[in-house]
Length: 234
Image (cartoon, rainbow, N blue to C red; front, side, top):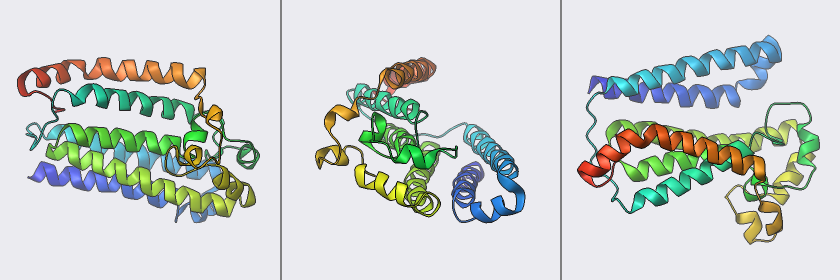
């Protein structure tokens, strides 16, 4: 019980500090410390809180799941993780939301690749990761971490839209008009043509490599649990 409470606190600290530093506190801290100082502070806090969450997760040696997904769901979940991997890799290139020079200029361009699918491909990759893990195993430690990441991804996307409207202004409003928060909504409502949604070979290749690596790392524990319990995560 103590270990589980520790994981709850560590996850809350990781999510809470990330959201606070990314949104309500960012402008004041940048004014006081400069961009470089803020980046250093943000990185230190993120590393420390993430490390605390990982250590708290592994300190719970026994975390029996209340429910485990059936075996047929595992290939579906794996396919969803491939989609998440492609979204994540694609989000690293040409993303107007990243804290880099030229964001307004990139936001004025027509959305292509993963940005035609959603204007928040990185956060949706994390949201998919969380939803997939929740769907696979209801062990206490898995639910705590996955729920925290899901909250961070969705709340972070909402906060990012608000922040970019303030910092980029008209360019971001036009970006919002051509893209969608919910994946595929801009395509379904014809705000963006379907031909623009091809992720690109870099995103496809990089996402496939990331997915293969993650699958290989998960294989020993996954195969053991599937064999013994017909599905599972921890």
